[in-house]
Length: 548
Image (cartoon, rainbow, N blue to C red; front, top):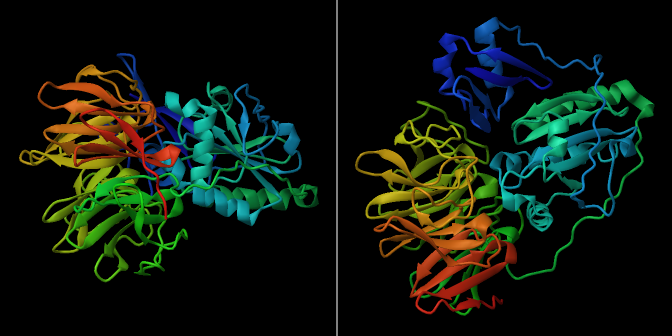
């Protein structure tokens, strides 16, 4: 086995994995909090396996120290820059700007290239770090997003524009649809950043999360080295704009049990309740992107997604804040029940049976005793015990992979939706475009549809042959599973008796949430900022008129 490690911030090594480390490699994806995940890309030619990982400094330094011994010093060397930064030209267009850009245009400025793909949760996690750097160095630093889309749907300019608006990105983004720029820079993982000095030379690369702490020291050194030679003239970019809509990128929809519905209005950082015709009856959250508790009118969220109703308590996955919140519908107050805002990372045998932190919680499902959480950021399923009021690990090792087996050994891929059918849990395992079953009796996980991180498509038919593309929503109804096949712009039905997948609704725009209630399918048609209702008998489709 050969493993490619990217160590520290600014150099790479390629080493044969010693026999005594092969066992350890089974747990790559982390021994340390803050490490991100295995496996970004892999290949097996029958003799060797090359694994390219999303990683952070400490895990890789740990493994290499085991092999060679290390002194813990930084590997960065600002004196040894010799590689000219390749140009960032592309035939697929630019966004958040009204012109094309080239590396030479930024002479005198420090440049940071961010290689990302908009469906990747780790790319989402580094956005606050990029914003922090932009705020610290508004005139000295230029950040350019290089969008190298993994999925077919992610390569379209319009969908990248939607992602820019959804995430609030304020720097230019180039559409690297065919991975041309990616290949020029030798990138092998999302996210990866490349730092370029004011003379246009590559300082180095860093893959994974924790970008601010990895890159900022080098920016400071460059500022010190170049001094007055730094071009501090402000650059102004023409950012993407959008029309105002009542809902903005709605994520999930659930029934309130009385003919009304709760919607996570994610782009407006709030939760809204509507009647069957779309009239807004109640709002939770003041719309600010924050984490304040308190009365409904003053509480705040950050891109909330999944919800689960338990009596008069509405549990909310406050995704951008890494929190689980609860809205008391009688008292009209919001409190935090799990999380402290930090990203929780747990690996292998670590912290089973003790309280843990959520990490980009995305989907929720309630039973009488528990709230089950599709914990996208750490590729796990968590369990919130309603009696103990604590959050625990439930399934998943923390690796990003399509691995079946016992709950502790199985691996997920950014799970974003969760439901229950006939006593078992079912998960929309997003990055693997898969549907997973958690057998609650045998404590095992198996894949019922899906083949892996890089096998996806749009194919109906038998479970073993069907293909989905970045599925994010799932709902059980009358023995079947209804799924939001997000990047195929469809709702599909998994018939659990015939073991067959078929398309129910098409022509959508990256739907994230699905619900079946009172004879209709209710869809959070996310990128169209809509709620769509489809009659199960007639197939008639209706876009609700959402109004205050």
